[in-house]
Image (cartoon, rainbow, N blue to C red; front, side):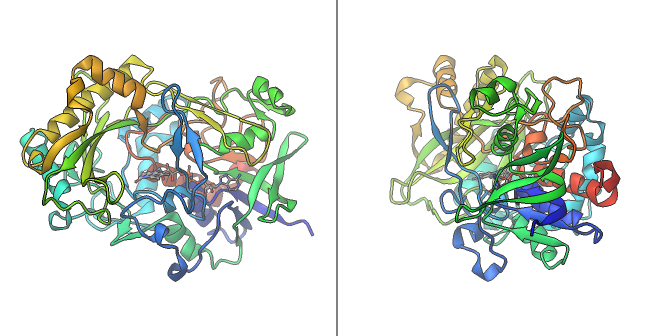
Length: 512
Ligand SMILES: Cc1cc2nc3c(=O)[nH]c(=O)nc-3n(C[C@H](O)[C@H](O)[C@H](O)COP(=O)(O)OP(=O)(O)OC[C@H]3O[C@@H](n4cnc5c(N)ncnc54)[C@H](O)[C@@H]3O)c2cc1C
């Protein structure tokens, strides 16, 4: 018998899990959450790579994608493939964007997403153990957040904060304070080692609800579209058996690298590209796969002095510096992060300091490789092609090199192994390095952006409703018009909170 749900969500990641949990609070709606990866409903059965937030999980629950950060280079692009999505494999940095990021989204024709519009959702999603009583924080949400106190920092992390002080950066106790700036502990969604993923925070309490079905190990091949309306999804189970799930509303939350391919395989996207793969164009939307944004980054790598404890089992990141490039009108458009260990276990003990560009002007693109539902997308980030991005990443990289040269961080350094000092650290050399080697901060977004219908590249409206297609909503990292000046997990959860809340409280907005 064909199964039919009120709401069917594709992808149990950061956004999809939050949406499923919020919508299923409305007992009048039946909800199905479909996920390609496996599900681990019991905490005691959670594999170690998903428990251990001290490092990312790169292999056991990954899609195996690659990307081209800068021209001519192909490297691995990790994405979580499991209930919890990328929130289940990530570093657990729980940072919000700058208020101006969301006001910029609002100014682009999405007034619901202004800072004052998103702040209640940011507060609702968190249980901040350090600042929960502040006006801009929450203390009762599903995602627990805390900061490492000084006595829990690894030696390189503590030295990083002291070096920041020496270099004149102010101390910032709460990096999520809306007007904050400077160096301090990272807000992180972990408790001890345990990664508080969206599977744990949102789905563990929701999965008992009789109106919520979680269907793992189920790959969505494409949307089913009849007479201009999305009526369900075509799925394949682990054995390759293909069937259809019907729904009154489909919410696509497969992430910034997977939502566009699902749309394109279903006939929604740039006409020429679809035709080239023999796909009938049902709704020509040129913005699908365009507008790819991210955070280009490049690290300084240091060989540690003898006796310095470089522990590959310690937390990989604990601290952060948010600051503004000289002459920039984008507040906190740069980030420097101390990485506790670098290289493989057994290689000479090393740590790294990462320079990250947080406000990106340039854009990349995502292309369909083939009509085959299992084919990986082609991802071209085109990092540092915009001169404004290049000059600010170079400036940030120079500031990062200064950290390795100042006490007490310098006291831990035997030698800077990258960049090679013999080649010099002049602007031209650093520009070449950034242009050739900048890599992703693992924050792709913007590939099905929201905006009004008049915006030629907008794919959905500000409520996530797909332009020109009834019964279809997109709600994940893809809908961000631009990357916020922060690691993206919290913003993806915020998107899930907002769309989930609209679905729960105003179903008529979505034709339910
Ligand atoms: C290694 C790593 C480290 C990171 N570290 C941080 C960090 O510390 N802090 C931070 O803020 N951000 C971090 N990020 C980024 C952050 O985790 C993501 O931006 C965020 O999780 C994306 O949320 P999403 O809902 O858009 O997509 P995802 O969470 O990726 O969810 C998409 C889900 O859809 C499923 N799916 C995809 N295609 C299909 C299909 N065809 N059928 C069925 N299911 C499908 C996927 O398996 C996945 O579960 C990191 C990301 C990675 C990969």
